Image (cartoon, rainbow, N blue to C red; front, side):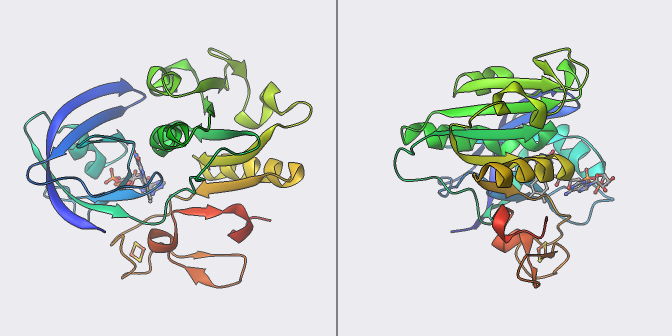
Length: 257
Ligand SMILES: Cc1cc2nc3c(=O)[nH]c(=O)nc-3n(C[C@H](O)[C@H](O)[C@H](O)COP(=O)(O)OP(=O)(O)OC[C@H]3O[C@@H](n4cnc5c(N)ncnc54)[C@H](O)[C@@H]3O)c2cc1C
Ligand code: FES
């Protein structure tokens, strides 16, 4: 059930690549149940910012929720300047998240993230691990300096890395990693990141006959299905609201072919 609540910032940390890790607890009461892949609409109290900003749920631990925010404009700059003790108003949890299977799958699951798109994958990995499913993270970035929260991901599962300049892990894109060579033992792929990366991952998944879910980051205003600014034409030929029916879709539903 979605709620509007005030959160108190408990931790704020620059984690590189222009990103800030925010941790917060409800000022009163408890956090609602949040699924990985869902997001929050965060209120920005800056004079020149009218709308809330959609930010993925990065992690939930007891009553602490985390967000990983990349500063790209006025809204995210305001969020990135929050300090412990500050109040942050949030509407959450919003949208339809990743499918977390109820029991062990036949193969491993591969979680592929690029840039700040890695944000929802940490909580997803934790939820999968709690079900007895071992996640492998394949994380891509331009260079070592752009890789985010590797230590946190390593505490949850195996971490493979690609960088475009070869400064960390294998050189190239996530779709060029040597893990793709030979027979795939993955039963499921989850991906979040830049559109071209997710489309390339989806093509590989289709070629290999693997199930795959992708999290879209269409521009959003209301986040609750009222303004229609986030619509995406799906494979059925109709426009669908990404904020309510997504942001996570099975690639079979997407018009990416
Ligand atoms: C469901 C969802 C989850 C998201 N999760 C995260 C997250 O966990 N961490 C995070 O840092 N960001 C996330 N984003 C993106 C984030 O919402 C935007 O970066 C933010 O709204 C930009 O606000 P701003 O005021 O700082 O920048 P603006 O001034 O609004 O825009 C600055 C620049 O960012 C671009 N931009 C704005 N929104 C988006 C977007 N949705 N996709 C691509 N480019 C955009 C604009 O085109 C412009 O070039 C998510 C977006 C969605 C839809
Ligand atoms: S953001 Fe308003 S309908 Fe999706």
